[in-house]
Length: 418
Image (cartoon, rainbow, N blue to C red):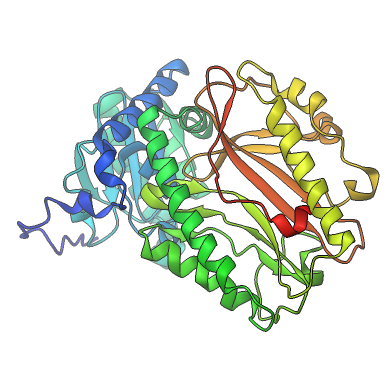
């Protein structure tokens, strides 16, 4: 198969790593951020006796190396680019024509062209492509970590995984070492988190200023997205903005509906923002021009009560099970429409851990310990089953050595708390 490197002769690409910048970049040691993350990943690999990881999730590749390339595209078209990580070496297999994008990243030891093992790329020759991919990878693994090494694999199509296993490679799931590595942030990493949040809060403020009866949900959401991109954020992972009766139940993405007078508007930011870090907080607004109704204020104050109660009980050393036991009791009339989680980890996307409601812990929950350096998003959705409207609120916090620190600073709505 012909492999193209369209930019092999270029000499002006050494500073491409500087494209991943935001206004706050000068105060952040991005080399230290990348080094910390790669060291975390390797430590988790060693803890599990995993000799190598093959990563294809673009967020995890970015976590390990700092490199990015068409993240939404490469997530949908896996494995169009992938990363091999061992205890002392990284090899980035980059998409056709994109090998220059890793220039300047000290976390990448070598760049090779990816062999895309997908039906779209290979058509009816997919099985042969998968075998070729597996043969090439097995030879590299044998050279770097030995023929019978344990290798963590993620998000490859089944045929490629089976073909690699046929070469005697012992395959395990890559999720555990990656998620556990990502869960604890360094002080320098937290500068990236705060930079992303400040940019997203600027975008939400512009969106809030644009809110009025007569604008469509899509028009309003586009204000947020435009401002995120203008500040060098990456993309919005969802379109969770709804109004009026579409706020209940939750998880209705923005559409062409025209926002009416005196309605609730609910938003979950879900922004992959500056430096690739997730800005995840939720707010609900009122369209005016009249004051919010007593029913709207009750929904809002109830949601805020849930968030503030659950934030107050979070501390380092608390087990996930104990958190569930101490978390806010959801009133029966709101229980059916509850948000599926009480809280969740947050880094470059939503991540480990998931903290469940008491009622859901037996079926869905798992135990663990809240640790310093975790960033968590505390969730609430309040809306009656069959009710007219609902309220979504969420705060992003950092777990410190002694308690928590609020990270999301966008204000609540005075009119809805009155």
